[in-house]
Image 1 (cartoon, rainbow, N blue to C red):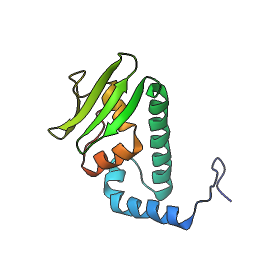
Image 2: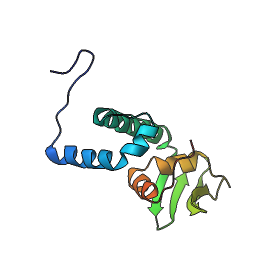
Image 3: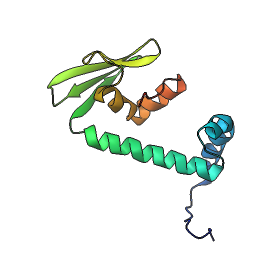
Image 4: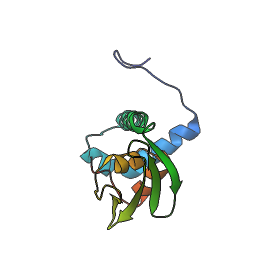
Amino acid sequence: MPKAGFKSITVSETVYDKFHEVYQKSKDDLTMKGVNSFAGYVTYMLEEMMQKDKTFARYAPKIEKISIDDDRVVLKDNIKNRIAEVAIQKGELFCQLCDEKDCVHVGFVFSLPDVYEVLNSRGIKNPR
């Protein structure tokens, strides 16, 4: 039974093992973010995914992913009725439509799980 104010969930051993492995490898970086336990790490990851989903839901009807290439993502901005290309420049994402590093198009690209994984592996972080 969990402590008062907490709930428990059940996940497969495979999922648990993957999360635990990443947690062990990232312990030092996570401690700097205030994550001090495996349970805290899982909570942190769930909160991060909910935030991404919220961003995705907010902009999805307005922006659509057209294609993903090696170093760029092509989007259709339904508000501006334009194509936006977000590319990696100098180790950061850069929107060629807005001519900015921090716009809704860059934020949308960070909300795409498959793109986020690649960016994260290259050390490219969301400017928030």
